[in-house]
Amino acid sequence: MNNPVDDARAMRRAIDLAWHARCSSSPNPWVGAVLRTPDGEEYEGWTAPPGGPHAEATALSRAGSRARGSTLYTTLEPCAHQGRTPPCTEAIIEAGVSRVVVGVLDPDPLVSGRGVERLSGAGIEVEVGMLGDQVSEQLAPYLKQRRTGLPWVVLKMAASLDGRSAARDGSSKWLTGSLARQDAHRLRAEADAILVGAGTVRADDPSLTVRLPGGPWRQPLRVVLGHIPPRAKVNPAIELSGDLFSVLSKLGSMGVVTLLVEGGAKVAHEFHTARLVDHYVVYLAPAIFADNFARPLFDGSGAAKMDELWRGRIVAVKRLGEDVRLDVDPVRGEDATRKAV
Image (cartoon, rainbow, N blue to C red):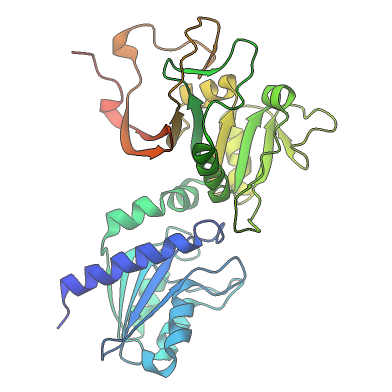
């Protein structure tokens, strides 16, 4: 008889394992899998870089003949099509797995229920939805990109306590400390592409590369809105122009799952006011400019009255040395604006 407590524990472990693949599997989803044999042994796997085995295949390979009669827990529906790797469904069937527990269905048109259908048709017991909310949160960028064709947009900003991003002369190096900057490089490592405006390239000449210990790291595509100046450090990069929705559509068609927007203030304002940001990351430094002419986080007009104020939801707060990282999600629907009371 199946034990819901054991099922939840195994799926939580699969979710933890999936984080191992977060910076290396894209554009494939970062998936974790746990295979539990009838005698209680467990074998684990997570998605390899593109071209390598998927999480389920890795767990099955590690179990070998011991996989027969086992239960396989996987955060995402197993694929049933031939891609760069063989279908996971066929490996599951051939291994003699008796039961498969799935976190969420894969919205990719090449899968989209076909994996579950293939397994069920082969006589395997399949359950869908175990810790589905947690898995959906972990895979939110992938799920959005597969459903809409648009990347998941993360807007990253750094601010002083009085809400400024740079001094009046434009200098901002370094507003935050080393731990916050290292954390920001982790955001870059999770992204498929990093986007800035041409003004930021001219003013700061950033390289937009991932510079973390323990490399080598996959380097994201670098995207500039507007013209890239000659000999800019951001090269090789691509230039894009036009309305932001078209820009996102173009990047989505190129396989970009997660887009990190790093600025500057005008670009941040454009993405924010167009309601194209899925997640905000703000690094707050214990610093004060106390200067009306210091540069703001957003450059443009916005809420003129309190009942027009944009409000989000703080989902995480993390201290990084002397700085604080705030993670904020938009509030969707009718609660997106509220009157102050």
